Length: 257
Image (cartoon, rainbow, N blue to C red; front, top):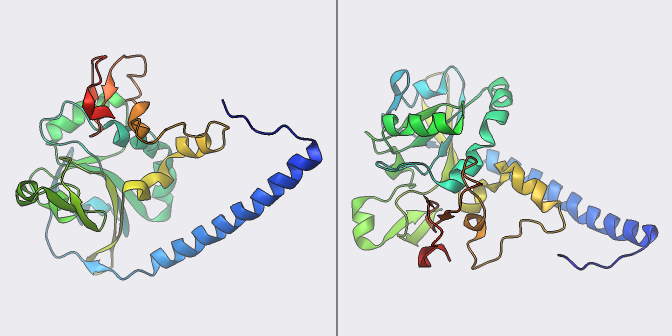
């Protein structure tokens, strides 16, 4: 447990107001960065991606569904996987509650994974999620947006991720990609975020950051994987490996730490 000083009300108030000044600085800085994000140049999407959905094949343009803005979450669920990444699932537990509000702001939202749709749907239903999920199994979307390594990258042992060359260690990686469609039907890629750049949507982390123990995730001891589970497996004794995949065994092995 934390061992913080125990002080009087006046001392506590002074310390709290000092921290509040810094919190306000952070809020203003976040607003500045958000405005700068909206001023980023755009890149026109020239390739005609077609996705598998519950309502049949849909182009990227059709995924907007009469909205001009589209948020896509790249969910780590590869072909042949029995279930999705635990960390991505943790994030997905926050999506449905936001979706009802996003749809009021000219924004559509959906999840995309490289697994075929018939492998995605059983997992989505098991987890009780309502958001729409499309498969990019038959196109290059995941490769072009750098969340799945190509065969060439696997052979080289490195891949492009989070806007830099990284060692290849994982079959799938997470992130957000944002798109805009104008009245002429042209589509533009406006923004992407990967790694810790996706943390802002994790409301659970916000709550934990308010508590004395915080996230309680020590470096070198698994981080998120040391405690996060699929929400229907918190009573199980398995573990999550460094690629975010759950194993139903008590033996953790070297891959976890």
